[in-house]
Image (cartoon, rainbow, N blue to C red; front, side, top):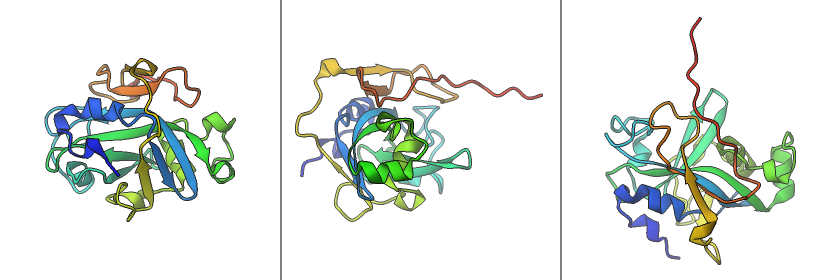
Length: 202
């Protein structure tokens, strides 16, 4: 199987992230078609990226090898999942923001009983991870060679360029106006845009 984005330079993180739209990720008996992703670059290049200030115990997976998963915990309650892109040593990753469940609907519904409808099952990064049955144990595992709990596969027909939209990233405190969020136009599974609002201290 060919994964052209595995050999793409980390500097092309936006292009390679957009190129993952329509790909499918399978885990835990559920298969999801990716409809929304968000690009993050590396050291000193992207203040919104976990890798902006260099490698740490938390973000070291972002520095390679490509094709591995970077999972992180937010708000003390949810896991989010990224796929590492580009050459080893230069951090770049795509956050899996939303998708359409195309196989394993009953399993996804059981994992997401609060979903309002099937379009909501994986509409948002934490919802997507929950629908797949993944957690922090996926961190550092490969999503391309079959050894990890998840597998990424290309679509039979990639989306047309005219069907891809881009805009500001969601919920980041820095570089929020960088148009590195990519989604499929008019797809009901794409998450709503919410700009980061700083918390005010009383």
